Image: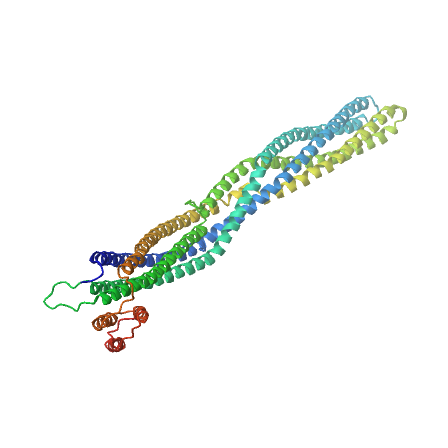
Amino acid sequence: MSVIPASTLTEATAAIEDVSSRIEDVFARVGHELGRGHLIFKELNQGLATLSEEVSGAEIEGAATALQEIAARLSELAEALPAESALLERIGKSTAEASSLLKPLFKHIGMITIIARSARIEAASLDGDREGFLAFTQEAYDLGKAVQGSIEGCARDQQRLSDAVVTASGRQKEFESRYARQLVSESAELGAAYSGLRDQRSRSSHLADLAGASTRKIAEAVGGAIISLQAGDSARQRLEHVCRGLGLASESSPSLVPEPVASEDGARAICQLQAALLRDAQREFGGDIGQIVRALTAILHDAGSVVGRGRTLFGAEEGGSSSFLTRIKQTLAHASTLIATCESAGREVDEALAIVEDTLAKFRQAIAGLGEATVDITLIGMNAGLKASHLGSRGSAFVVIANELKATADQVSGGAGRLRPVLDGIERSAHELKQLRVQGDPTQLAKLEPQILQALREVEAGNERLGKLMSRLVDEGAEFEGLMNSAQGLMTSLGEASATLPAVAARLDTASAGPQRPRPQAQDQAMLDDLFARYTMERERDVHREFLQTLGLASIATAGRVQAVEAADDGIELF
């Protein structure tokens, strides 16, 4: 009769078989999940490569070029606004100065017509060559009236010019106060978007390489974890061997061919040997499980890193789905709206410039005519005065009138001379303003609209593709994470189950303890040798040998059986 309680052996065998059956199930499931994860990461690697190609594509390059050009134009427009306002203000002041210079000219030209009329009256009283004097005065009067009409036209044009400049200047200042900062801000945003896009493109290849390296690392880790799963088969075999040994330590069941029965010391020895083997198997298996769990933890970390790099490349915020291309699209749309606003606001300035050019041309023509007329009037006055001086006292009054006509003509000529530099100043300011308008012309900016629309289409198309790729990366990453978490949970649960085996070994040690160490008989040693011959792992043999040494045994049969097993080895790998 066995000294080991049957219930102890039965419970121990049941606990070991439970762990053994769970090993087979868990390792099969984990192996399947790791295999599926391996395939997923191959797809992730391909997706990241495609994502990198999209970010580095020609379409995104076109959008980047448009961003740069539009940003530069908006910046030029913003920089031109203060100069345009200053020039409009200068034109306004010069226009006001021209107006003040026109008023004396009206007075002097009016005086010429009055003097010419007085001279006509005086000429009528002369006896000698009255018709000649009348012709002189009539010519002077006609010239005066012609110049007066021309200057009155200039006055009307000057008022129109003044009104247009005041209106344009007011609109310009209003626009500058409302949109100058927005132009600068929008230009800065477009510039930042361009820099970000260029940086994104330059980093895309590097990020894809890093992600590819992480993916390869994960693939290697997954492959390593799959290889590590072979430890499950080794542990299961060792547990089966322990269960067989425990069966030898129990009483033999009735049989037509009864098996050898161990002595009491033999049963104790076999039970203690199985406890030692069980502890060693659990220690090695626990280490294998820990290694697999650590590998899975590292894989999960790297998987999160891969998806994170995809998000970085995509430009999405954490947890968001909006990419950097979406933000660029919004910036381009704002720029388009602002350009339309600039174009509308600039029409007032363009209209004022057109009036300035038209008015200056009329002024120039009027001043030229005024110069010719004053020369003619001066000559007429001088000739009339000389001719009247020959009449003696009778022509003295006419001489005085002729001198007054010449003096007034000189004043008109002087006024025209003072007006000329003012008009030159208006012309220079208008020319500078026109140059600025050409450089930052909103209509020129509006011509970028097709380029903006094309860039938007390219951004939208690219964004759609990038969005699908990113969704795929996130979904596959989530699936892989779920698989790895499941595998990690299964392995952790199995580790917890296997951690109960040392307690089973301790109960076996307690049940087989005695006042003296076991002394197996000859038939017991044969049974021990039979157990040794069934081992498939070298570690089992080492534990067996060490245990026999504690009993002071060194069976010759053991060495012989080892050689026989090695000769008949059917290719089973020893661990």
